[in-house]
Image 1 (cartoon, one colour):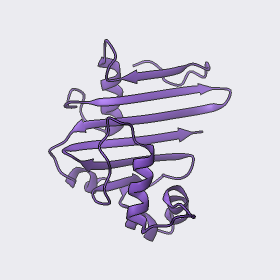
Image 2 (cartoon, helix red, strand yellow):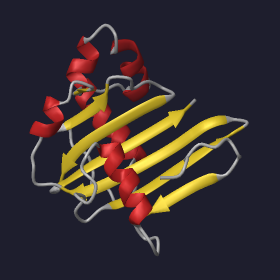
Image 3 (cartoon, rainbow, N blue to C red):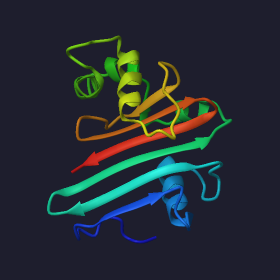
Length: 160
């Protein structure tokens, strides 16, 4: 696979509507930590930029999902919103990321609202259940997963 961040000021975009989606599917599987060729009914938009401003990645994936939440619950790098709020290592950054100080909500509802404000149209709406964030999630880098409407969806942002 080619280097996605060669610091040349070019934005590389992969979408499920590309004439040849093979490279985008490979990247999507790697981001989800799933075996190559395992993505069913994949929809995605993956944007990678690197240059003088640093790295800016905007990532969105949605796949058919029948596995339930067990795979995500088993990952040690993901937390549901209550866990992120309860953990002193993640609490401040996570709350800063998802909570709207002008319209505060319980943390799980705030996390779902945050996802819904940032998701792509091809991703189903997030409800305040079956959602997780990567433990490194904060204002400049965050990764969210949720299950809704028979789909596993992923959103990611990285500015570094």
